[in-house]
Length: 155
Image 1: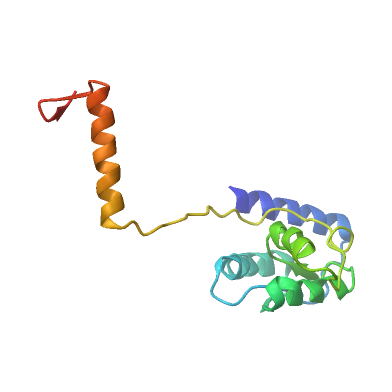
Image 2: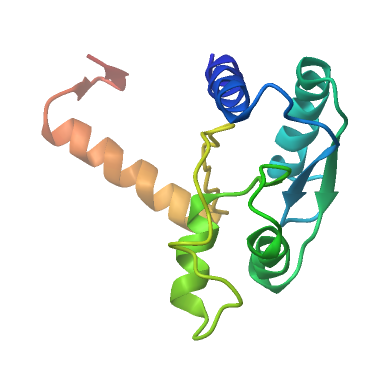
């Protein structure tokens, strides 16, 4: 659903730009290394975009500097719609907080086009057997104190 919404927004922008756009290949810059989530999204979207636009869509991975390298390439490219950044808005926000001087202005050098995808974050922690045992005992005592467990069976 989000993919269709993004495609619709992008095509609306293309139609508003001009009837002759695009006349050459589009570049999608991914400021992360190949094989990650953003790379997968860019490569998944590039084929349908190329078919719809009638021009190649080239995905370039430009990792480095905590996404600053790839982001700088897009910031310094001509503002003609042929170079697109596919990354997280958090990259712009975090870079602005981490680095004193960036080669671009995260607030003014970019124009948001739309949301290509959303990712759910999952945090996993290795639990030591002693900790797991403590948590199980604590939960059992809590259930017993609430009278939810009796005769070894849950109520």
